[in-house]
Image 1: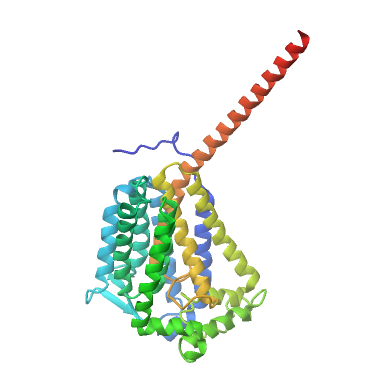
Image 2: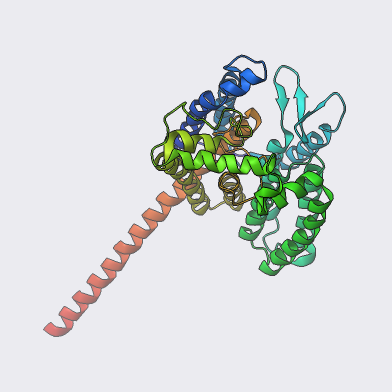
Length: 405
């Protein structure tokens, strides 16, 4: 089935999605330039190494955004199975010697010729959103059942999460669970199935936490930072010191003290703490407001889209941005155990930025039809009001005639 789109059938896209996505990415470039120089120097790299990497990633991301913004969003439904298979192959590839790469405690990267390293789990987030959108949209009448709705959903989600847990990448697991559960709920799932599945997931995850020493240590240290005063507990305290030192207006751009070997990954996972220390509470609120505005525009697109697949796709992409932002901030303010989740658009990481920009490009494309829906709704409401006024006028004329008679 061919999809044809002309200027008559496409509305004006939501340009705020484009402005906010690129605005946040450029702000991230500025913060990476401040936070990464010392890390690069310590690793015997050029001072602007991480900045140059992110600039290249932003250039590629811009191309990816406009390609995804041009491709009609319904075509992604055709490719959903292929994209999911590619993502699974990528998750398996990280374990192949000579192809996968290890960083810290996780083996989450693959080496791509010319491009360098790539994190397959970031591609998995988008691929899973596209596949779930297609899968849920095609099961509108049975998605609320246990046998044909919940069981296949649980198997699909678990098969991806197991591969990610083997890396291990606990942060990405939490983000994917948030995305998938939200999409499943919006798609018409039975709430009792969701709560039951959540209870089982918590029970099983407790065994994983106890079996993996580093996850267990992070979880227990989150409850009591003094248990590991020279490791994870130390990092938690230094992040809080950084955020507290910023005060209302910050120490000034580039003047963070905690980035000098006190914070873990200041250019990536802890960049929110660096931002708070340098720019202060007021400006950090503006950053959160900008991300919140993008999330609001995303959910607005979902509400205005008549196409069920497009609606679920918009919900998944928007939940991805919102969920990952919330988790990163929660970690940085010691409200969640430390996980390697980047701040969307802001943290250093080409894989994350490219996939987020691809998602925003798709969201931008969906907004064309959402705007048409709003315009049609506005016209229909106007027509309804006119008809109502004519009807009222006819009643008044009828009363006048009756009085004259």
